[in-house]
Image (cartoon, rainbow, N blue to C red; front, side):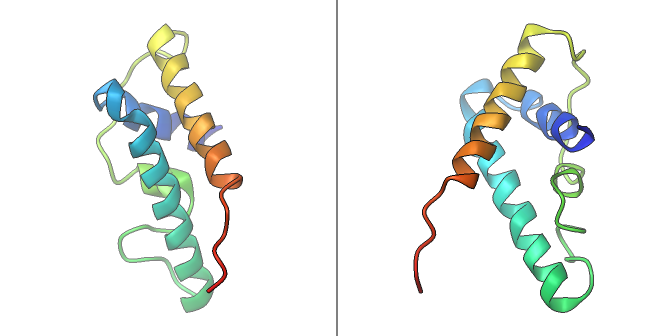
Length: 93
């Protein structure tokens, strides 16, 4: 839950019309850092451990209360981006 919370707060610090793209980038960057960590045996120099928490920690965050409608909308956007990422089509290369 802390990963979702901190990533949601990153979205809240940005204009709402960019939330989905920002969420998708956070997720992809965390995935890239995770692959690096697994291959290199150490944390990624710009992405930490590869967790969503580590990636979101690199960005400015808002302090909006969790029970606000804006927070819930940002969390919903993040969950939709996660769902889209999980259901992406992997290209065969």
